[in-house]
Image 1 (cartoon, rainbow, N blue to C red):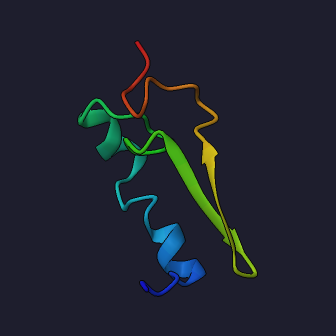
Image 2 (image 1 turned 60 degrees about the vertical axis):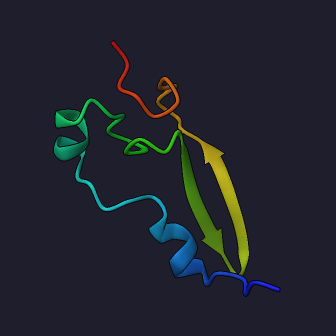
Image 3 (image 1 turned 120 degrees about the vertical axis):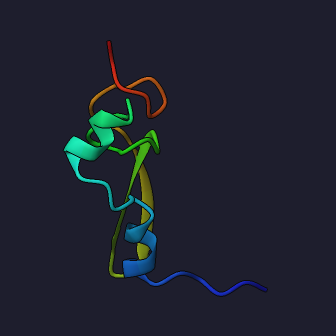
Length: 61
């Protein structure tokens, strides 16, 4: 059985691109191409839709 990620590992899935780097790659500046944001608190891990209403991670036109 795979181990559960720590909250820090879960949130690290958001990526490490800066907003400018994401834009340069034609990705959404908010979710950096994931289409969702990963958040966690006290072991409760959630995926939240990108609030920018991007095109599944691609930058809006």
